[in-house]
Image (cartoon, rainbow, N blue to C red; front, side, top):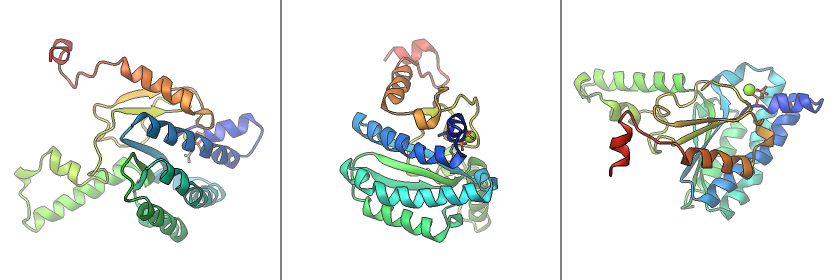
Amino acid sequence: MDGNGRWARQQGEQRVFGHHHGVRAVRETTEGCAELGVGYLTLYAFSTENWNRPKEEVDALMELLVQTISKEIKTLMDNNISLKAIGDLESLPRKCHDELNQAITTTSSNTGMELILALSYSSRWEITKAVKEIAQSVKEGKISPDEINEQVISNHLCTKDFPDPELMIRTSGEMRISNFLLWQLAYTELYITPVLWPDFGREELYKAILDFQKRERRFGMTSEQVTLK
Ligand code: IPE
Ligand code: MG
């Protein structure tokens, strides 16, 4: 979800104004995905590197997070969505952490889409943590180095309970991944739109999905192999 700051500047407003307007896009995208039967939607809401932003902006984002989670529980319940979170959640302010855990518990028996918030998340942080855990298991003799395979690594990532994404949408036209799910995106289709996040909504979501549906996903194989079933 990128472009909130630029969107606000275009309106002659402070960056935080853009973040507030980004909430509408979050709601519309979440509802839109749930309606379409999407199984998992991951929103990259706050990166490890975002902690380096000016304190006022970080504080405003954390406050917005608390408010939005509590306000949107009804949206989650109405749409049968269960909330999950990935990232260094311990580093979030206490209030945020509590609000988040409460929403996760409240929505845990919903059986529809899983909405995964990436908070204080970065892929390098996640991979470093996984390597440490695996190294510890080797040291304790629970696993031998020969037994380390892709599955073992995946099982140590925050996303162990979720499938790899099929489609990644990035708004605001930046042509980069910015430390997001580097391992999991190996064969994900990328869709980058110049639309700034506060202007994103159902219509833009449908455009992205229609584009995705035209792609041929070969996973390293040939076109003949994937079309001959
Ligand atoms: C994305 O918008 C929102 C968050 C990172 C929380 P930005 O804040 O990155 O907006 P730009 O990139 O400055 O326009
Ligand atoms: Mg940005």
